[in-house]
Each structure stands twice: as C-alpha cells, then as structure tokens.
Length: 219
Image (cartoon, rainbow, N blue to C red; front, top):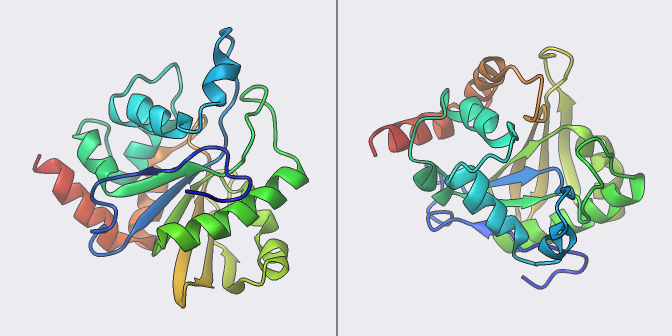
C-alpha cells in the first residue's frame, strides 16, 4: 500500500472483504514502541512489522508480557479462549502513530497525531472500512481539526457515558461516498475493565459482536 508517511503495511485478514455481518472492520492500534533488545530498531524498520506483530501477538498469542490483545479479545468476545486466527481473518489492522515510541510510557506529539490522521484518511480510502475500532481515545482529540484540514466531512463526534476514568467516543465521517463509524475505546494495555467495555461495545455494535461470537465459538 503506497501511502505517504505510512511506515508499516496494514494487516488484512482473508475474510476482511467479506465483512463482519457484511461490514468491513478496521482495528486501529495506537503505536509500536521500541523494545530493549539490540535488534529492536531493525525490527521496526521492517515495513511488514505490524503484520508480524498481529500474527505473533494477536493470532498465536505470544503475548510478550503485554495485555493489549488478550484484553481486546475479551472486550469483543468476552473471553480469550477461541480461534484467534479465525477472528482476525475478519479484521484489518494497523497502528495509528507512524513512528515507534521510545517506550510504552512515551506519548505521541501533536505533530505525530497530525501525520497519523492524514495517513488514516488515506488508509481508509484504500481499505474502505464500514467500521473502525480505535484502541485508545487520544487520537479523537484531534479529529475535528484534522478532518476539516484534510477536507473530510465529519458528520458526528460525541463523547459517550464515562466508563471508569475514560469517556468512549463515537464519530461518523463521510469517505468514499459512504459513512464510516469510528469507535474509540480505552487503551487495552492496563487498568482495563474488559467486561465494562464489552458491555459498551455490545450496546454500540451488537450485530457485529453477535456475529463474531457465533463464528469463533463454533470453530
């Protein structure tokens, strides 16, 4: 995928075009961050690094001491004991911030978010999702300004009922002559009450979650 400033190629599952109950779902992570091993920089220079991470962490569950994917799985399905390869075959995924953070405590800059939204709009034009789930809410703080700056119609942006110390956000943009739903949830890395966020997502996207639960439960 040839897109300006896109450092890592998205993961695209085999069933992505088929959709989740007919709707294409793009999962948007927040960022990669450099590890402590000496090969970390070399790994992050690989344009296929995101695809490797999804295969190793999300699908094969080599969790590397991170809770991001098991918590995300629970927020969707209610558990982490199912056929992850089948689940992820229905998704596409890429990380929003286009440079590796120094550590998991580092935060993106305003410029990082500006570049990230420009990249997102172009990735969305290529992948043409119907629904996007953002792991993390910080990016939504820049959506209104960046959509206007990039001539993207923002039809809705609202904060929903607070869960713990985080407000979920929901937005609707118009792209490729259709509406795309964006759902922003708390980052799943830590202090994440997955059952509360599962309840939230069940209320917001019930048809998709029901379809996924039935699909992975029967395989």
